[in-house]
Amino acid sequence: MDLAALLSSASCTTNLKAKNKEGAIDSLAALAVRSEKVGSVSEKAISMALSEREAQGSTGFGDEIAIPHASVAGLEEFLVFIAHAPKGVEFESLDKKKVHLFFVILGPENRPSEHIQILAAISRSMSGTSLKRELLNAGSTDVMVESFLRHAGEKHEDGPVEKRKMKLLVLILYMEEFIYHILEYFLEEGIEGATILDSSGMGQYVSNIPLFATFIGFMNEQKNRSNTLLATIPADREDEIIKGIEAITGDLDRKQGAMLMTLDIGVWKGTMKMM
Image: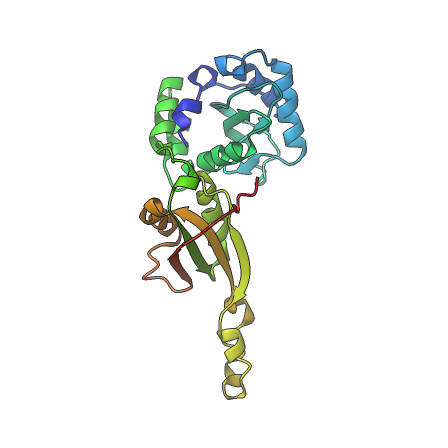
């Protein structure tokens, strides 16, 4: 996902002023129409689209950050921009904190998969980096844009999936807290379909054998529940994707409770793509 091509510096600001959520949405819509990407779409249409999305649930996910996003009728390409509100805005965030950084994503109505990839890429760019601090301290939009793109990086373009050799990736996790981060990583990398199976380890059954009955309390059922993720990945990106997963889980050769394997696929038809 090449965020550099989507980010509009004309719409970015280091000084967003708004007294409440409604005012912030109107201000963000006013910033959006500064970009040539918006074309003939009106400020009012953008404000309404963002408001309708917020009515479904706040995009203020916490830690002073919000990612307002919406599909907008008439928009032909994606637009991404950043706004810093120095005084903060009450935005109904999950952690009740004021929002100081807004990452706005606006896109066409008929391209939901790309919208999700952009959302995941921006979300992951904020994880475990100094990006938030740099953006809050940016003295100009040029510095803001440079910092964001440096942390987000650029992704290489993939060739057509049907012409590439694929592998089946199998990831067994006993640590449920990693699942959502890994799925977010998949979306960012263009792996748009994965199947998740509820599974269990042998401990759940061994603890029911009379000989091992005394270990029933030790082998509690929760620890023996697992999730198995199945996904098809391009064979030429196998090492890269495994490294990306281990950036989340840690070195799998040194960690108990997770296992990854890949299998060659002889024939494959169809897709697990969800949209």
